[in-house]
Image (tube, rainbow, N blue to C red):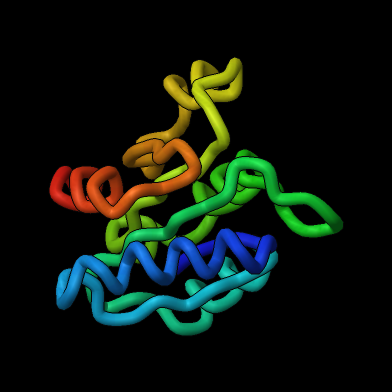
Length: 125
């Protein structure tokens, strides 16, 4: 799963995931964190699920931090199947705020995301 509003970023995420071969079975994109949460609640994952979240979502939807906070309120059964990986532009002050993020934040990827960095973080999950 990927929560990203910018089309070129979606393209790059899709391209990088496809380059990993069969490590990833499916990829659903959401432009709003609310839509992702609704899907997780209405159709809980049965397999381990990685959720890539853009730290700086704009517009009326949930930003990355707000998504993580809302995610902590969904059922334990869903949270246990999911790992959140935050995507950000650089190692900024927000990076250090994430250090104290809830356990569901499993890692951070700095944009532009490379296939190597993506593969490395997926190995740790």
